[in-house]
Structures are given as structure tokens and as C-alpha cells.
Length: 573
Image (cartoon, rainbow, N blue to C red; front, side, top):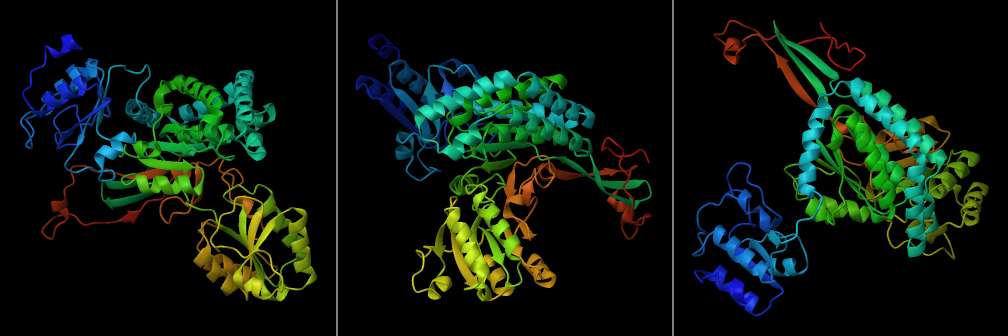
């Protein structure tokens, strides 16, 4: 350190701070600036990017601007001081001290390990950074989108073949994950069951991939609308990929390896680039499945279109990549979805924050259907987002044999009942009262409440539901239609279990998630939900001036019948 100190001269606050930090053997030096950190070129210029981690060997990649307006030295002086301190054994961060963006306490944020400013490091990791992965995915994704539909289908079919050919490799990796999960002892039995793969599950997954491959034939490049604006001026609305998707998986039973693989296939079919961020519980399985995915993508030179993020990036750090990520799809708990919705200020989030699903049993319901539907909706898989959380009972059913059968079935299935306030008022001794009518139990528990009829059931669901999936059980068609028409949830069912709210069960091949949003995609989101559109105008020297009052042309705006060929591209007419 003494030898290093001889080559730094004290010219400004930055060099003074660096020397003091090394002399004091400080663990961390924070150099504050009037910009967010170190950029690869002067901030405000085109393509200037904030560098999260700067390595000592990357100095040649930086173009410096003018000196700081709030100090003697500029950014170049800060970098020299930072590198000198780094050599002396002190970690360094350059961050904004004038307008911190995260919590207003920039020093606290840095000490807590949040991704603020630019961190200086001597050791460069072997693999690419998440920013580099995103760029690779975007570049390769654009080529994927330009492929012929047959080529995208061929990639997915090859993926299905690899599942069968390499099943022993996949199952061996999965066995390692299972062994580690059992040893850790943190996963419940239901989670372990879902984590486990088998030859049967892989065969079923291969069948689903072939369905997606078939659907890919008519996805990207499909003409939605065609208009003759004027003679020799035709307008088309055409389906295109959204761009770069970030799918974040949490440790949850319905977000494990097979789901991860299906999402990759949907991204390929829709021509989207994909970043996958999964939990550590299925790390070995996901690694092998991702390798197979990239092997299949290599068939047509788009290997990097699907990336697995393995770095320790926090969710809020990934959400900062708003210039390169076009859509975030969270797969996990309602808390994960809410966290991402708060963090992703500049990126759309497709998902639902809660799955508070209702089953309303009408006065005209058939008792056998009621028992089957309520049991399946609650007990088939209680942790799923499409599981029933509130059972609404028509007032006339209370103290009837049907009501007794419902309660007895729930007792046998060991479902804990929480009474709503109105239901509790009818009973001398009632179950524990629900702390809230807006609760997602995700377990063998549910709320039971009483309503006067279908209108009150709809009103209750609108007030306490989450617009996910809601069910009516009745033999009265008129009542059922009122329920289906008046309720504005993403999925509304008549005499069917809430568990049908699923992309595979809907015939979509698979799903990336379920959306309760009001725009774009809603309900189970399959291939169609990963597409948007663009407008293509073909003219022959047309100008707007031609259509002015003094111009020679008139608008026609004639609808032209849309005829698709087998590839999903526009026809030759």
C-alpha cells in the first residue's frame, strides 16, 4: 500500500478521500456525484448507459465528459481515485449525492447492499452480466421473430424430442434437486410433489410442446385487419412479438421446472426473447432444461434468445432494466406480484396480485353438482391461485339437507371454515369469524358467507374479489346468465370448478400466467397474449397533401377480407 500511495497526488476531494480511506484501512469508500454513477459515455448523450459494476480492466471502454458542476474534479478524477483506493484494499461506490432515487438515503441504501450507483471491483465474473444477457436475448430474439413460422415450430418440436431423448439427464438433475430439498426440510409435501419430475410428466410436457408448435404456425405475421385507404394505398394490422419478456419464478408449487419449460416454448412460438429468473429449489433441473432449450434454438441460429439469469439480482434491480425489457410476468405469490408492480415503474407487469376466487351456490343449485364443484374448487390444489377462497351460500339453503351435506364434505376434507359476519349472525356457535372477507388462504381454509341472491353475490364479489375466477352453481339458466354477464372477473363459470382457469385446460397449450388486468391479455395468457400488433402501410408515392381540400385524392377506407395462408403470413393478393 505504501508504494501505491506514492503515485497519487492530492488535487481534489476525491483523491483526498481515497488516500484517507486507504490510510484508515476503511472497508468502503463512497464518492458522491451529481449523476447516478459512472456511465460508459457522458450522461445525457445518446446510448449512455449506467455501469452497475466497473472492473479495473475496463478503463478503455469509458468516454468522459466535462468536469462536475459541483466540485473541482470530474468523473475521470473520481474513477482514478476509486481505482487507486481499490488497489489499496478499499471497496468503492460512486453514487448520486444530490438526488438519490431509491429511498432518499443513498448511504444507507449502499450499506444495505442495494444496487445504487457504480460498484468498483477488481475481479470480473466468468459469465455475462444480466444487462449483457438481456442484450444478447434481444438481438437473438429479433432474428427469432423474423424466422418462418415453420422454423419456429421446428425448434419447439426438436425441444419435445430432446425431452424424450435426454430424459435420464433431466431426471438425474431433478433427483439432485429433490435430495437437496428434502435435506433442507423447508418445503412442504405438496411442494416436493410438484418439484418431482417423472417420465410420465415429461411425456405429458412433450405433448403440450407439440400443441404449442402447431399453434406457432398461425401466430407471428398474422393479418388481423386490412383496409384500402385509397387506390394503391393499403393498410394492414399484423401480429408481432412483444419483444423481451422477463419471467420471474418464485418457490411455489405451480412455478416449477415443467412450467418454466412451457413458458420457454410459448416465447419461442410467439417470437419473443425471454429472460428466466427462477428459484434455487429447481436450480439443477432448470439448468439442464435451459441447456436443452438453447440446443433446440441453435437449430436456426438463435441460441441466445432464451436466457437463464443465475446471478444474485434482486427483483427491484431486474425491474430497473426498463430500456431493454418490454414485459414482466411474475409467477408466484401475491406478495411477489405486488413487489414487482411497485418496482417496475417503467415496465408493464402482466399478472394478478391475488387469487380470491368465489363459488356462489344459488337456491336452484343441484346438490350433487354443488358437492363436486365446491370440493374440486377448494381441495384439488388449495395453494393454486384459481382455488376457491370464499363460498357464498344463498340464504334459502341454510338449515337444509344441501347445506348439511356441504358442511359435512368440507369437514371430511379437513377444510377450516371462517364465517363471514352475516353467516355468523345466524348461528349460536359459529366457526371463527374471518378477519377479512378479502383473504387468499392458499390452504385448506375458506370463508363462508350468506347472500340473498345473485345480485348480492355479484355485489359481494365486486367488493371483495380480485377479478380472477368466480363460479355460480345453479340450474336456473336466467340466473346463471345474469351472473355471467354482470360479473367483470377475468374468468366467470357456470356449473364448473374454478380450477378450470388454466391455459392448458383452456386448450392454449400452456400459459405464462393469469392476468386480471383490464387491457391487453386477460385470464390465462397463452400464445395470443404474448403478441401485439403493428401497422403496415403500402403506398405508391402517396402524400397527405394529396387528400387535402385542394388535393386530387379521396379516402376510401374500404375493408378488405383477410385471407391467411398456412404459414400465417399475408396472402399474395
